[in-house]
Image (cartoon, rainbow over the protein chains, first blue to last red):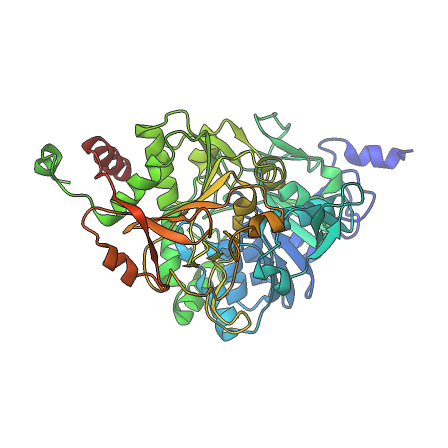
Length: 301
Length: 257
């Protein structure tokens, strides 16, 4: 039974009293918060954190806020680390990285990621790597609160002896399959185009694994381009009800230099610029200092 | 390109252009192709322009039936989503589309390839202390296991065509005949390696890559010199049919967009 108080909380436009840490069990709506407060309340030192967004809707603004707040010892989880994890790794935020493709898409390698793995700079980073299919299935198992997912994959490769997978036999057909452990991050952070005032979220375009990441995680934060009165259904749109989201923060341009389809464009030139600039440790630190540490609304470009 | 060059049908194509054009020709009768960015993507778009307008382009980002006008920088470029027949999540892409073998041909690249067309895109050197850390597997292992067939696109160089991989990221033909069947793979695996010097294809019996085609202006010896193992040469080796003016014009126009 829903309590009367819960229904009152869900009433649109009604200001809600602070209700403790965001993302707690039982709330019917997501908290609308500032990005700073949301990151402060949701992301702790040592947490496992998944900032998702597969080549689209990458939550750069939230990642920058994590860097600015000086979080340390994080386990960073993400299929494609992309520039955002290159930045976070280079700033010493990560203790461990779980991933499946650590490249600068269409451009080349990620130099801060490489420097951390090859030379332990600025600190050693432990890695656990998978294939895309493996990571996608790990998130899906996490979203289903299952302990593992079953798939065809990994067999015959050297990945098997360097990551967490195990053979499993189908009890019905006897087929040999591969089991991958569920991902259950402490916090998921994703970016979307829109939310309403109850924190219901809609994203459209390439949907990646954002919905799975939110449902797999203990706590979640969604940054959005804009808060709207009412969500208007979009073709191919993915709607995530506010009651499974911990906090929603407005962050216009918050996916730059990635993009939010229909609102901002992917800044391909920035991805090329990053390849040149980030090779050098000192230039990287100077750039981060100027564009992220000293800029509260940093969205890179 | 100059006006003169445009009017002059005898102008020569670069090795890279020939590689792209040869890869595109392989898609003449293909229904669906899975592609990453770079030369594979250029080849598939070119194939749609000159050989096979109905070709369905599938990108790992979840875009099925994308119709890009320009060459995308990343597999996530907005134009791919906006022109696609369907846009799906990553779990759906791998579990419902790639895994069941719905995609006919996949183009893959690699930093290293061995004589059985196994691929390395993970590390050069030791895994725990790599000389060069590469991006990693991405979708390749399951794509190569399940798509109907795989065409590898690589620059022909000794450091790429190696006797032994530093890391096996993706299984091509494993240790030879029967390997794919033993591993339970459903697709045929690599059927061709298209390089800037020629084309290698697996011998039907031994599954070892054999040189079947050299591009115009390239000798068999040159290809052998750039291969890190004792490369076998097919008895019916052919010279690649030179790019037609139509192919070359279309490619250059595409690159100029």
